[in-house]
Image (cartoon, rainbow over all chains, first blue to last red):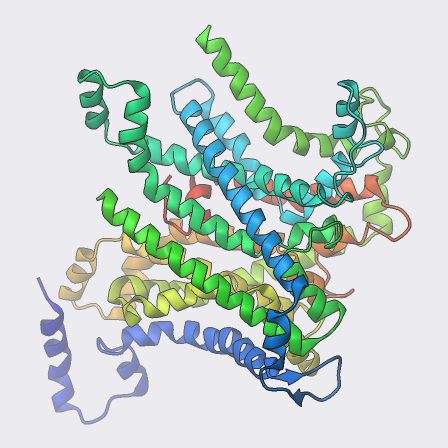
Length: 313
Length: 267
């Protein structure tokens, strides 16, 4: 079998006889092919990742409202934002959305996965149907639920009135609206955690559980000491991905509350400053702060994931 | 007895996930007054909402726009991500740092990209054009596609390539003749995911289009006027916005979890 060094030597041999090779051959040669293949990616990254980043960095040091030429401000934008209560409120709302949604999705998802973890007739159909909410676009999802949750004739309120509850303005009462948004998110994403855990449960080693059963371990003990630790990496994957997506929550708000009724989460706040107030300086600064927060949280969770993967091995 | 309890549980789960989707289908056939009475199960079905959506509203055009933008951007994404994913999988290009950086572009608040691109596109005349949206969706889907393809490429045994190299194939012809046929299923799955994500995308479509290139999602939100909400037509819009992805999802069900978890879970 060839190893890296051999390949390089074979490649070099004909080169010693020829002085110069055409550019195409050089690029596709053993040495450069790996970089040649990522050129398109690097171009796209250069344009679409670096340009916005540097634009935001530049603008964040300026006062730029509407189309007036930007004026240098130094760190004023950052100072203003970090002392702004509205900003911290929106961060708080995002944080509570993340905690509530991820918490419920993990526990309920694991519960339902344990419940469904058996062979039964029609399991593929049930599985396929349960996956459908994942395919619904976030905006369409929010509009659907807006109709069901309508205060006067929404079906949920009609059903509530049957059992004697009074109408609830699910999407316009502050204190309720944010929980309604959370509920919609959970409805859409619960299947994801269910099926991640189902896949994980199917892949568990059978003999360990057999041994536990032979030793007379109770089901609860087996679950706590065997199942849970083995599921931990999968839990971390769900947590990592869902936290990343929930921080970026904004689509369902466009169809429902538009940031009103106490639902102004972090990304909606950025959107409002940048695209409704058109304060580009503050908007870009906010975007950068939000990006930094996301990367820090992402890195911490990624560490935990790697650790969980290492421990599971 | 335990079987009965099990099936009751399955029924409840199915009800929660499927009823809302089914109900919006039913609602789309309801007339103006029946819509205000959600519990009325016996009603005269009408196509007035469909007629309104397709003749008075630009739903057909919006669907065409969404389709064009999704398909072309997916082709672009594959052109970028296939070679890159192969390079990452086979040569570990950039020792994982480049791959990780590619992944972090997904963490950007869309607003980070939207502000600078709004002004750039305005100066270049790309606002409200298909090309502008295609480029944005290329950026939007690229990191995901690269990562998923990276996982698929890693499943192809390296020995195949060594064997081909002994036979005197160059790197490019190995990629063309040996790797490509093997990656087709994985690439197809990745492409369908890119199509779904592009079709479902809302924010960029909302900011960067107005009339010419406006997408299905943009059309949906326009039913929500300041005076009245047109519930019936909106239900029709929702159906045509979600139908393509639901159908795709049904046929892809074995791969959905894998795709959404960036290939981390082989469900």
